[in-house]
Amino acid sequence: MRTYLDGRVVADTTSALLVWEVPYYPTYYIPLEDVDESALKATGAVKHSPSRGDAEVHTVASGTAEAADAALVYRDSPLEQIRGHVRFQWEAMDAWFEEDEEVFVHPRDPYTRVDILASNRHVRVEVDGVTVADSHSPRILFETGLPARYYLPKTDVRLDLLEGTDTTTSCPYKGTAEYWSVNGGKDLAWSYRTPLPESQKVAGLIAFYNEKLDIYVDGELQERPKTKFS
Image (cartoon, rainbow, N blue to C red; front, side, top):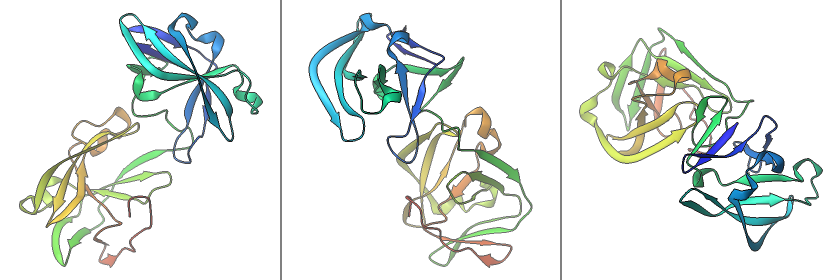
């Protein structure tokens, strides 16, 4: 993997570690020998982690660009595996690549999978008793750790009940989503206009939060799942 700042390679490695600092996704830790050390400017500050120990804080400088406090160097961590590794702040860098494919938002989790299946199930979506979508041709998206999402053709959705919002979110597996309020409920539906390659099957389709409204599949009301989006 490689990371760039101001168009220049700051790190290039085949030995990056994936470290789970939070439960949802990993972070790259890069061996110091695979980092352009001339780009690291020590600030003299130290950042402490109860699990990872003390890290030296560095500003990353490349070309005419500087990313303040964007790198942590772990020279003597209690976790032996990350000693001598650098952690870059993801959003401070210009771009990240795995091989020659750009990666967005955060490193992809090798234990997360996205599968999209065409279906002829009857999916009906209600908000406060009003049917806002009714389809016999959903695409069902299965993503590790999340409930199945039903992506429906816009022609099967009551678009007159949808109002676009300024909300956007990004996902390293699907891309950037736009949102709609539905029948007065804020940000209940979303769509990927130009999803990433592995999620092309849902391009332009609309999905609804199972957690926040009623979805019937083949006439059976689905239980609202409990997730971080509830």
